[in-house]
Length: 602
Image (cartoon, rainbow, N blue to C red):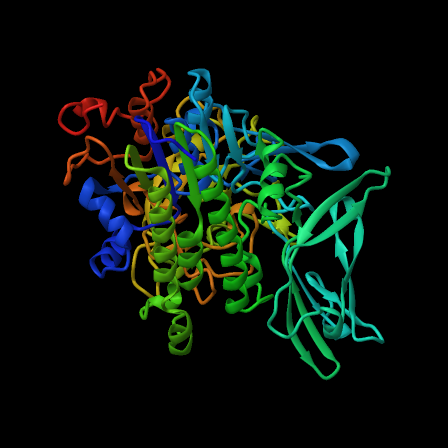
């Protein structure tokens, strides 16, 4: 068991927790553990990053520096010198056996690496952007970025005996004479493996039941084999029609195909102690829900199964290991807000009274679930521990979509040919979270915008027209700010960051798919009636979508406050609490050391 010793820090990441919702639920008595922390210490909004997306913000937390210095600047951006999107968290190259190999883009050391150098021990679990995991004294479990066995962010499947429906993620299911069901699993590099579900009489499923984790082995062309795990739910058995849902096939934790933990033997040890567990960086099947592959009920069942597994794993490590810093991240609130804002918010255009009756409580449920994890971990950690609960951003309704590339096409800045961007005539195209890249001569392969006066005039023209854009239906302005890329990311080479960056008014969100540089058959602005009904990515200005910060611990006076704390300020505060020198590259303010004797006595 963990010994109670001074100067230890427990950090709990409540991804997406919003200050206003947190305040409301605490006042209603629904978050007793967070309320107790607040009574012992402080509660404050927390200023996030730009853009306010999880890998960017959480990497800023882990490193104490902003996106310019740590290198993760977006989920997706335009590849420098090429007309295609590229992932912002890592680069992908060809590895052994034809499988992808991953290299992280983070350029600054994490808290775990800094503590390792100082001879201290830490654990970091499931923090977004922390993939591949870095070597530390203690352990790292990869977060968002960790792919499934096929190298995707999570590809589930729906199986049916109705052959006419088979297409894409809808797969064929064959009934056997004995009542068993047979299908096919798709693995890496075009491999397959059999799927078989026995009849009920032999241990098969009743309608509505789930399997435990099932193993799958895929034989690669060169003779090597890889192992995965997946779960099944029987959705329907009605006459000749049978329907089955399959989760994403994930890397088996006892033999992960891609880097899952640091040290590498941590995942097999956890699997040996606890059994198989979800390894995908974001195991909730949001795309399956958005695409109509599964119902909201099945989505929630699958998500909470994975989250409950993670809670057990987290408590196991916290109680069974020695540590100076322990960081646990949970996605439940963020996922619930994306999917169920429309059910909670009667003013949302996608609000439906029947759905509200069924799912209107799901966001509050997710907050309560995280609150329970906070209570369990605080109890296990003991009294002589400073506890920090924070989120990377908050949440807001997404009532209207803004399709940036549709707007650029509509106004003559972007042209298409046979459904693809025609770069011989296109002057500007959107990539990433609200980024606009100009097709600059001598920088881009087919650049047509002349450097200098023409480039500057085009930037100014775009900024002015976007700032004046009014949504005809709501009457509201769409774009709140237009920022220069080189001002947001000073010192970064031109072409590696957008020439312009948009910030939208809350209530508007960038249309799905825009980040990939696609031009969709959509109007510039349209009503959002999808399941993705709440968001944070916007893009929004950091002050418009703040996260939360709660702190309590020895020496922290009840009712304490910090002046506009930022997410990059947390890392130097943690190092101060642990008695470790703050590296000069950290740009966060020393929130705590500036108030020694007033706030903390350490």
